[in-house]
Picture 1 (cartoon, rainbow, N blue to C red):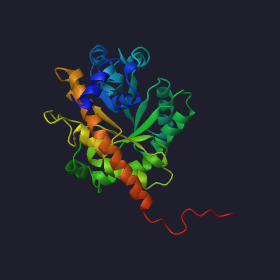
Picture 2: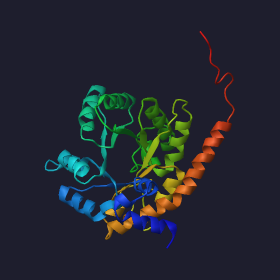
Picture 3: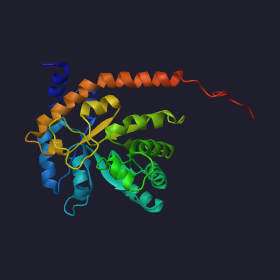
Picture 4: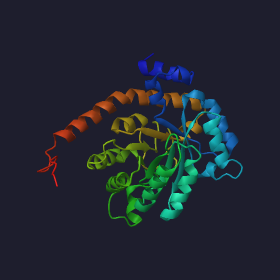
Length: 294
């Protein structure tokens, strides 16, 4: 058995026995609980056990009148899971601010906002004002993975999806967001946009949906990618729904994806290190770094 297989076999055991590196690998996988009911979602959570530590809760489950936010609290407090709350919030800044303040009280680890600059700014400010031990990370939706280039142009946009993701990533960083959501095909555009912003000292997190293995159905996703390819390109998290939730053995499917994540990490870190060195080697504008006394 290879190193990655041994590692993910350990991940199928107790989370308390996992090393920091193993926990880091586990945290790169976010499983989408796209179910109509709390019972269906909990069945999967119990099935996956300690294999998965982060779950995405979207509109279908969050808006269920019999589950909703009560289920999110249960997932966090009783099952010790982190929640990626994917509501893609967009409204006028005041409404966004008030909504985010309420949602931060749930204790979710991630919250998604559409990448409208006033909305992002309002969300970040509301998050910063919230009384949280671990602040919620604000992630901006760039372009949905269910849209391809032709549909994007038909909607009236005069820039490509890749260019748009770069622009929206820059706006997200400038307004204080922690991360962006984009398909694997735009990861490099998002990273490039982040590297161009001098104040972006801590980088930006990237979460990538539309993840499929070779034999998986794409369903309604148009811009898809293998998990290992997304990790190599620089994704910090990959979001996987139906390929795991509709598999006959979700636990083993999650394990297979974790194997691929583990195998791709060395190449990812090496690639990001090279790009960082290339960035440092670029010629600086004349006068850059000078401090003027006034």
